[in-house]
Length: 234
View 1 (cartoon, rainbow, N blue to C red):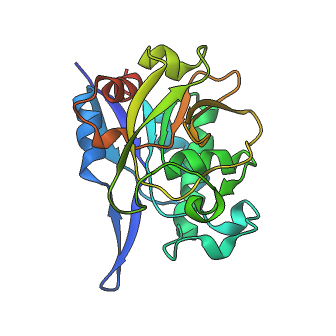
View 2 (view 1 turned 90 degrees about the horizontal axis):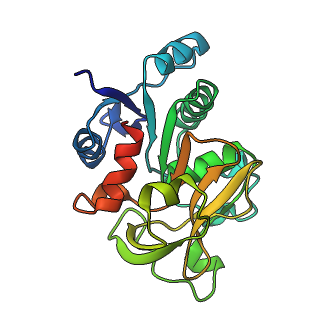
View 3 (view 1 turned 45 degrees about the horizontal axis):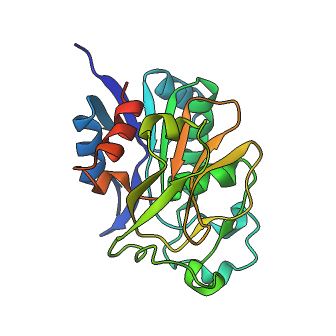
C-alpha cells in the first residue's frame, strides 16, 4: 500500500563553502514510525514549483530551527535573539510552502520554531527570550541543548490536539528560549505550560494545522507523541 508522502522543510547549513540541505534523523524516524514516507524539501523561489511540490505531498512537517528574523514580526527586543538566525532563503521558502499547503488544505504539523513561524506568518509576535523577559518561568530546556521534561495542559477540549491526544495533561520535552507572544489572525491557543507559556496553537475554523512548541520527535516511546505523527501521516 502506498504510504502518505510527508514533506519536511530543510535546515540550511553553511559548511566549508557549501550550503547543505539537512534534516534531523529523529523527524524521519517519527514519520516512518507513523506509517508515512518522509522526504526533505529544497528551497526554491519559483511559485509554480512550490505549487507543484505541495500538490505532490500529503502533508507537511514544519520542523524546529533558528530564531525567526526580528524584522518579520517587528521585534522590539532584537538584541535578545540567538546569533544563529534563520536565513532569508529558509524563511521565505518555509513561509511559501506553509501558505501553499494551507491553500491546498494539506495537513501540517509545525514543531517549535515551525509553530512560532506559523504565528508570525499570520501577524503574531514572539517573546524573544524567555529567561530574560519572563519572571517565574519554568524550565523549558536549553535552546540547541538539553531538553526539559514538564507537563502541559490542553486548554481547548474542542481542538484537534485534544481529540488526538485524548488527555487533558501530558508530559512533553522542550528546548527553546522563544515562544508565541501575541497571537496572529485566526490563531488560537490550545495548550499552555504551568507558567502560562503557549505550548500549542491551531487556526480558527481549520482542521488541517497543529503547532506545538515542544519536540514530539524526541519522545518515540510516547503514545501521545506518536499519535501526532499518526494524524499527520493518515
